[in-house]
Length: 308
Image 1: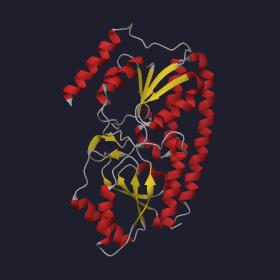
Image 2: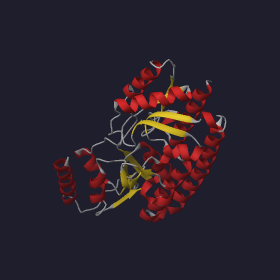
Image 3: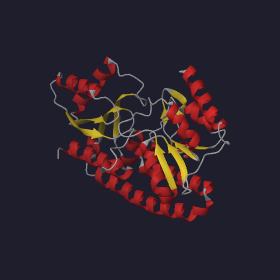
């Protein structure tokens, strides 16, 4: 991994050296922006509107915890005027590369702009925080503000448009946050228990009053052991939890193993549906936007827990 990191950094500097050290804008003058996760790609397109050209590295079903930058990605980084990524060690394999590139151009970790008093700890790493901030809509609004402020600074000519787009979108997210709270309130407090493939939903749990249990850790790079499966199966059986959930960017085998372990205890727990966690849905679908993804998740969770 260390060798690959240095090779990619060398590739970036060679590409930069071949030009004048700045990105080459297209004839239409739009800002060239490269993003990592699909959630960041979406908010950048919304805030940037007609004045940006956004290329996202990670599409539907891509796990950012395991994503490794390619030479093609390095070319995109070199061509970009601005790079947005999540930060908080979500893009674990790319963090060092992005920090190095940030010494030469505008690179912003949008989640790292959030005050640490609002962040949840990452138990395995005392100096790190849980990166899955987008599951609390009110926190993700701060990421939108970080994108807005960066675009305003990078392209003052179109600052008014970026500010107007962000204002409208933040109003939409305020309504979305209220919708999630309204849907969550339909589930009795003692039934608000969410079982997922990995520990991605703790911000969701804190914001909307769910007890969240993940089979794997915060990073999908961790493995769920037999003891983890058995302990969670005991918990599900004891609490008579009706449903657990798979995730679009995480293999289903561990959740299926958990379901079988519960059945062996004489209780039948269903798979309540697929949630979008570290990636959104396919482009062109409702779940292919941040708003649509959040609405899908809460509707799926509430429907399954209520048996609708």
